[in-house]
Length: 295
Image 1 (tube, rainbow, N blue to C red):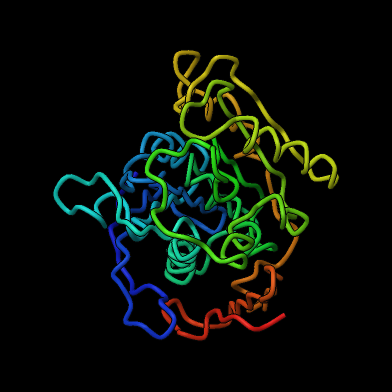
Image 2 (cartoon, rainbow, N blue to C red):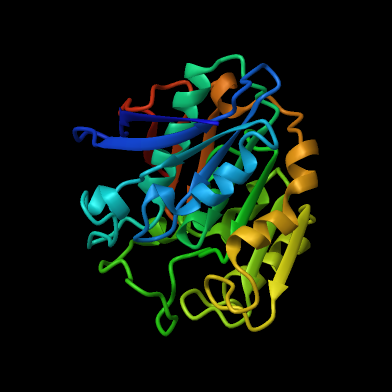
């Protein structure tokens, strides 16, 4: 396995872009059979949070694994300590574009990769981003895996360590609300969570999402760790949970659709009184990558 660090300018609408730094783990024998997997870190954490899962997956399952340092967290927030977060906080919207654009960067850099094997994993806020990624780019992933995920902006009374510190409009709440838009998810979904999660309510996020996905007849596999906390301790940990869930999936999962990036698809998402329009034919930092229109 080799490591590659790269950066690109973020999409920021009409504002100047920010540098998004990412790290990739590259298999020793990179080929047209190699897939690619996006790993999304959690709130306040740096991109190396998921390196244990990346290193486990890379050579064993022939996957180029990439972890972006999305804006406002980790080293992007504190270049020395790599911990903490900014306030006010975006809470997964622009950060989803940061993560998807890191994936696009590598797909452009290695155009021979097997685009039927594009996967995404995230824990906590990273799980939120993984879920939103499958809504923003619904034809792209062969599967998504969300561990202990946030699924929406918490309502009053919910516990979330380090809340965003600002108010959100109804459209902003909607575009971050996975249950509201989960009918758009086309790939299999894998979930795990601890029933005693102290940071993100199990019943209001992971368990509720599972019920809605089943009602929508989505392909869903879930494991709940009775007594587990946000990191799944003391029952297990996220690496061991990943190893339990993923081996056969990493070998066999394939997407039968042409991915959104290659197809240059336009994705429209109705959010309260607005419509988010994403144009995947546009470049990573192109101000026209997405825009809002009135519904």
